[in-house]
Structures are given as C-alpha cells and as structure tokens.
Image (cartoon, rainbow, N blue to C red; front, side, top):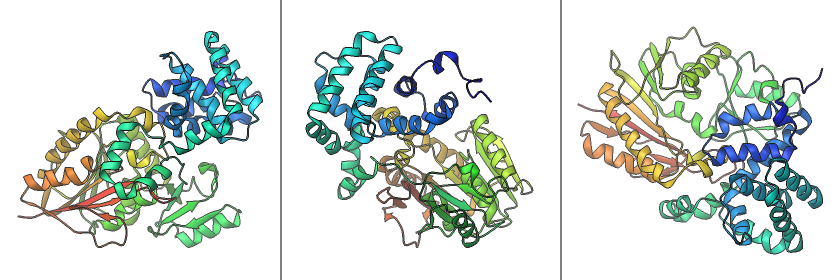
Length: 437
C-alpha cells in the first residue's frame, strides 16, 4: 500500500526538518501542540515519525535554553518565527542528538531554503557551524540555562526557593507515561504480569495502588486489552483524587471541567454514585468522555454529560461532592506538554485566577451542607492554589478545610501541593473543602 496516498502534497515535499519547523512556528503563533501534533504526524512518513516527534518535543522542551545561546549570535534582531525555529532545531540536533553534525546542519539549511527563507540560509549555516567550532562553550550555555520563560522562573524562585534547582532540572525533561488499571475489570498485579509477559518494561508506581509506570516508549493502543478497557492513561498524581474524596456510593456528584474524563471514569471505576454529572464547556472535548466511558464499559453507570459553562451553570439539585479540576496555567504538566513554555504568558495568570474564582463562587452554593468540594489544579503556582484557597476561605465562613492525612505532598496553609521534582508524577494541588452550617 502506498503510504503517501493521504499525505498533503505540499507538506510531503518538505524535508523532515522543514516539517518540524512548520509545526513549531504554529506553536509560536499560539497553537496548542495537543491540537496540532497528530495531524502533522499523520502527514509524516512512518519511518520518520519517531524522529519527528523527538525533534519537535525536544526543541520545545529546551526552547529557552537554546534561545539563550542563539540570541547573542544574531547581530541584528530578526522577527521571523520560522528562522528562530530553524536555529533552535538545528542547535538541538547538535547538542542533544546523535545525528552527525554535517547532516543536522545541511538538512536544517535545506529546510530553510524549502520554506522560502533562503535569505536566512547563510545565517543559519554560520551559527550552526559556529557551534561545531566551539561546542563546549555553546553547549555549556545551553545546559546551564534554566530553560524557562523568565516570568515563570521568577515565580518559581519566589514560590519554591528550596525546590528551585529540582524544578529547573525536572522541567527540562520528559516524564514517563502512567497507566491506571480499571479495578472493575482487573487488578494491578494481574495486568502488570500481563505486560511483563510481553517483555514491556513496567513497574508499580509508589503512591497510587492502581498505577503502573511505563519505563519505555510504547504505542498505548497496542498494549494488551486496550480496546477491552482494562486501563487508562492517567498521571499518578492525578489518580490520587479518588483516594482522598469521601465515599460517594449512592451520592450526587458533579465533575466540573471534566473533559477529557480521566477523573470521571476513575470515580465510576471505584464507586457507584446515584448520579454523576460531567460538566464541561467544550463539546469536542466532551466527546472524549463519551469515548472513554464506552471503551472502559462504564456506560451503564448513571453518568450525565452536560456542555455548559461552569461559571454560570446551575444544577437542579445540590451535590454531595463537587470535583473542580479548575482551569489553570498547567505549569505542573510542562514535562508532558513542553509547548506550555511558549504558550503561557505572565499576564495569563491573573486572568486564570479570576476565572477560577468565578467558577468557585458559582459552584459552592450548589454543595449541600455536609457535602464537599475538592479543588484541584495541575499548576505549581501558589496564586492559583494556596493563595486562591486563602481568598476563598476568607469569604466563606461555611467552608472548612478537611485536612488530608496523607504521606505525600507539601502541606500548604490550605491544601497539599505535589511538585514534579521526581521522575514520575506531575505537579498537582488538592484542597478538600467541607460545607458546614
């Protein structure tokens, strides 16, 4: 079968580096990698997909470190996204991959020409060749850089001075994938054994009893019993949500900002609520919840999916538990989504904090007395987490923190913060709030 059949003729005519540059320039223009990566990968030859993936994510992951080395070498500032993408991509290959220098340089320079940026080809060639003459100097500049946008570095230094070095080190890396075993169908020991029998390198995660860590890159859909719903992909720290909530059997539960459904499906695997409402304002992302419910065979559960805005939506009955996985900066998941370094801006944080506040204010009256709201983010910024809760408790005298008696995380004035300072587990924040009379 001709695998070129469904490829875009224009895109297919570009070499691999040019294809990577096109995608990275879209990220620079504000597009999300999660919405762009698959459609670009689908247009890349099968034999090149792994390298395309590595070059794209690696360049984004080290973007600000590479920038610190490139900028001084450009004598006159040039405002061209593709040029900067090409320079960073070229330098990434030279420093972080085993691609021979001559191949990395020639392919990158050819990419610049193919993208009709021939006027910059000599500049790209000169800067990349300069690295080959002084690899220790430029390499040291890149390796010593914190690889974060300056605004985020300053916030982390202010919020977590004692953890700063660990955070800088980890946020330069990728993180392994974690599976969550569906306890309605199997248990961790049984599925771990099944994976090991297929010579897949896996291990038990430490905090969640349902979590299995993948220690090698594999195709998720090719893993045993994917279509039968024996597991989901979910970060270990995200899995802790189901461990810290009160028993919700026969209770009314609202999962606010629920898409793509990791926590919705987890709750339905562990409990049998009388009703679970999965609320989100994105119809396309809500389709993911439906797909996951079907694959995990949880459609018989009492789950209602609603596409509404959590800042205004009103339930027709008060809830025993509201799970609020609040919109946030996603700074805790940078290792899996390195484009966040380019997409997020300092000015976004105030807007996000305001949105979180509005959702909290709308949902809190919908919790019944004696019920709970679990506030969650995948952020590592105190403005969105501890400080948001300090503000919330100061305004709501009917709110009382349920202190979590757990062995993990960093206790805050309110809630517990998990940082991505180890090889596994993203940055998450949890605060369990009880409504009192």
